[in-house]
Length: 319
Ligand code: HPA
Ligand code: ZN
Image (cartoon, rainbow, N blue to C red):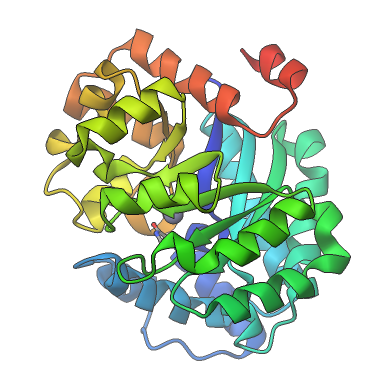
């Protein structure tokens, strides 16, 4: 039985398995530049974040209708339930779809159809977090927030993802202020490929409540001390870090050192269709590679509920 856990760092577009990609391509008459699923899987050898993002964005071409987004989310929730996930806070990238002519309403309403049934069907409660693409302009992010206004009851918060280096958090100060004024919760990717200073900026300028990845905080002892003191949750994704070459091998991952330092770590799957495992697979992998024992695995699971955007009573029930 997998440990019950919450998943807090999961891009729904990154759960698009090759089989579903080909099924949707056929349904929507989209031609993929791969002969079959095997050939597509062979393309999953990434040099860095950007080389992954290129494939990740191009494969989204198959997602066109509400039914496609519903099927994508339902497939993830089925897998997540089998991995012990009881609560999932799910990222989506509206700008990547709007750019292809798919309206934001199609994305949000399609995903929501699956999410609404999730507790009953899969025993998984859910929230949606809308991410801005940081390699696009701050104006585009603000327009996206505006476009989401009719659907805000479906969204718990906003995040920031895509190519990190050269796109510091401060670029999005205004849109984060606007999101906060709308009552949205705030998170951002920081310190995945970008420097520790981006983590500080996400906290001080964007006022995020959780940091997605945050891996590179380990290069700055004063920052680690602050994150421990303020109990800032980090949504780590160890398999992603290996596949995107932030680290060479899982055996080199600092997760054990981060836990020993007292950081509020959680373990998540990021883009599991691309990175070789869903969240419980990741728990197993860090147990094997890093000797993270049962007690620490339980700490990671407990942290995931504590860091979730659940009300206190619901989180305590899971703990
Ligand atoms: N980092 C940044 N952007 C992303 C990622 C990631 O790991 N996955 C999907 N978009
Ligand atoms: Zn991510």
